[in-house]
Length: 65
Image (tube, rainbow, N blue to C red):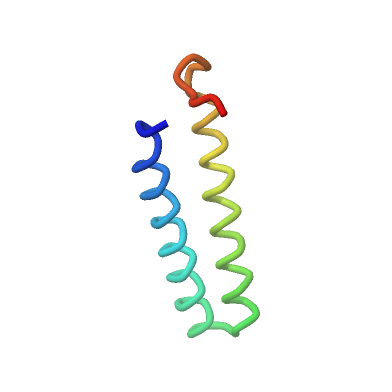
């Protein structure tokens, strides 16, 4: 479990910073609603990417809960 802790935390932090950046940039150029939509789409993209990466990992290396 400790092997996946730090990379997962870094991935989540990067996703949050990317989402905040997408919100700030889009809300400056378009509107607040467009900024919120961009932030949500960014979070959705990173969640899908995380699930895809988990699916590609061999089953024996995944932490069991």
